[in-house]
Length: 400
Ligand code: HEM
Image (spheres, rainbow, N blue to C red):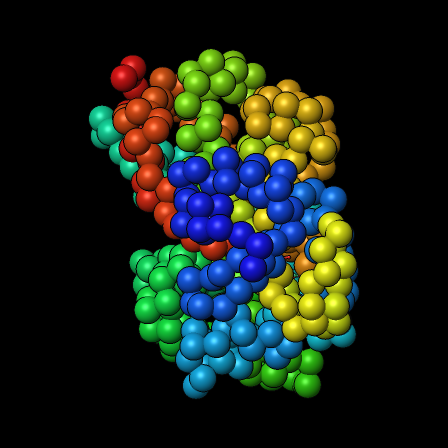
């Protein structure tokens, strides 16, 4: 193994970017120990990352990769959480993605804008009386969760149930004890939710998927449960942390936020830069080599796990000028925050829209918002895949 504990990016949430910069320079494709005792090859340069994400020899099919999930996914629910599009290769992947892709097109998403704007205003109304709030809890999480509930047809009052499980699942497998019970609870909840929907269908995505399940052989029971599992996880932890990480970065230097307040029309470009600079998905999900694969001059053996560090690729100086600087008006150069290739994020248009609405509404209602603690006192949660804060205390109207 070609690495040292000092370069462990999984245990160093605070110094993540320094650790990744060192790996990019010294061992850009390197085998690392994982908290569950397995290992994975970490890819840190942009060019290698993009190649890896588009290479069909790096499989997403969980059946190809027992090692990532060994001792983690309880055997009795295994198939119910590992038959979704992000755990399959073509042709299953193509079939599963096609079943829901029409619900996530840019046009369908844009139609949600007025509703999301109302939701943002409502959440800000609820915050308005407070001197200090945790923006993560009061705004960054509730907004995407409620959008997702609306889209899927999940009763919004049940958000508290699945938020806790999702949080444990995305933190994993850093905490190998919390994973299995959270997955089992989530699968139980989804089963019960689908039962209720079957009895009382509505005009929502879950009802549409149930109809597909019931009318033919295009979707099995495990695939349906896995799809809902994936959407509930992928659809809110990501966007919530884009909003929270983005606000942290913007508030870290007051003139950044002042520019957004003065010119909210810059937001689409600013959001791309925030995705690049401190995006919410720090590594793409595990892939497994189906045969030996050469990447960045390194031969990865067959059957190995590969983790592509999006956080590192997006700050690669070989790709971006001033890669470690936040440049609010950076000329548009695509980044890997939403992945690349056939698994490119299905929810990217929705996530971008939610972030635009969220930042714009905050800038209008609370232009004087400030961090309530010094920037270096915010705490990052250890996680293999998600870049997330434990909280984001802010004052709404004043100066610190
Ligand atoms: C800022 C917010 C988001 C970010 C940064 C993000 C990032 C990503 C990334 C990096 C991938 C590819 C993972 C891989 O290749 O291993 C992905 C896939 C996916 N995302 Fe997102 N995502 C976000 C929001 C959303 C939303 C709002 C939804 C849906 C409601 C969603 C649904 C999905 C799905 C279904 C996939 C799997 C696509 C496939 O396998 O074909 N994401 N996302």
